[in-house]
Length: 206
Image (cartoon, rainbow, N blue to C red; front, side, top):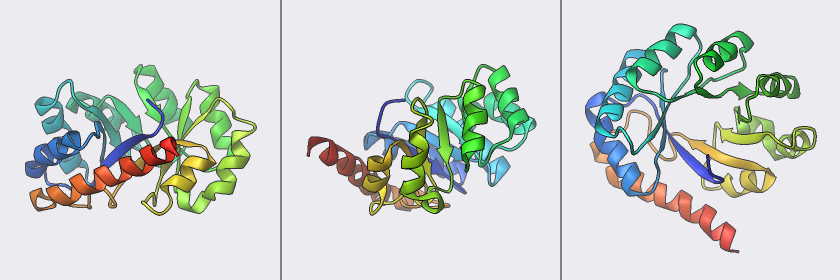
């Protein structure tokens, strides 16, 4: 995953709209997607449709994964990386046994240490707005090789502050793709995608 990667979180979207929403994101320069299993059957069907429509264009992940059966169902549907809401060592070991990339949710140095012990090099700081930038800066010292994915409340007002604190990727939900988005939201999704990317690009130039 490249620095400053934006991951669009798709949550509660009806499968009939997801291909066009994915195309809008691709047209706007975003190719990393996380489909949430907060509504499991709907999420799995979205994964299937995206995988079939864009077999080589999308980095397709699944989020809100909490059980081995969800891991299996998601991989069968076409997901190629797993994101969990929190830390579960046994689940992490199960995902790693599948030779699949995993970004586990963490909330403490102890959880970060456990993830590192399994060879995981990118963790999801969630909810990042509760952890805050001081936490990110402080844990970067003892974990210099760990990459931080900011998740939970990332928006246009705080993304640059999170980047400055040390986050290298950003999973964005409703500020990018509204929960339950439809094709009526395509233009708004495109504009949001462009705005987030421009913020990061301008910061790099400056």
